[in-house]
Amino acid sequence: MKFFITKIVFFCFIGLGFNTLNAQNPNSVSYQFLSDALIVNENLNAFLLPQISTISYENGSLALSQRNAKKIFADVASISNLYQQNNAFKDVVFIEILVRNQNDNNFSLQLSQLQSFTQLEYVLVTYAYDICSNNQVNCIENNLRSKIVGDSSLTVLYRLDLPR
Image 1 (cartoon, rainbow, N blue to C red):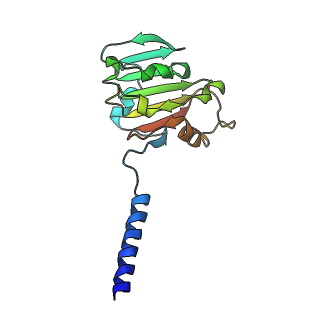
Image 2: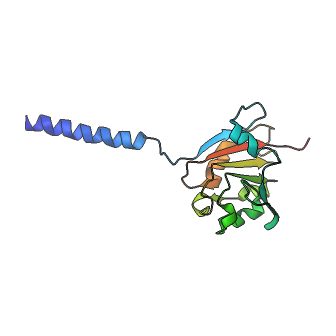
Image 3: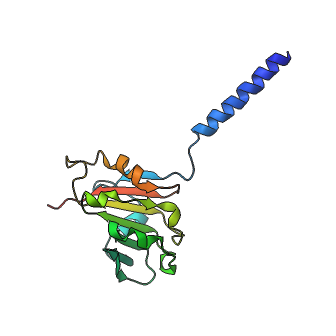
């Protein structure tokens, strides 16, 4: 009888361990392709319009700063600017990062260093070159999983915006 109870307790602990391992991390980053056909919520659509108040960094320098900004645009050379303690970032909900070419694709975004972004919900990575070499997006998500580092409950959107 003692052996039987020990087995039951053992298997209960094993089962709890597997459930813990298989449970989704509530702070895991979700990835989603942003296409023209994708219907997104109104809140997200607002960030895709040029009228939203924006802070813009280009080539590592501040290019534009509007009051009460909800969006930040940055090229890869400017990512380090996002890690600075900056009160202007506190209301930002949306960051867009532009990857212009293969050399830019060596970037890394450390989510743990975005400490000034207390309202951040979305990161959009826009590729302005054919990253998958087939005018498709089939390799982008796997690529981004190694570029965006850390746990967060935000959504990473990505798109291909090739010159016509």
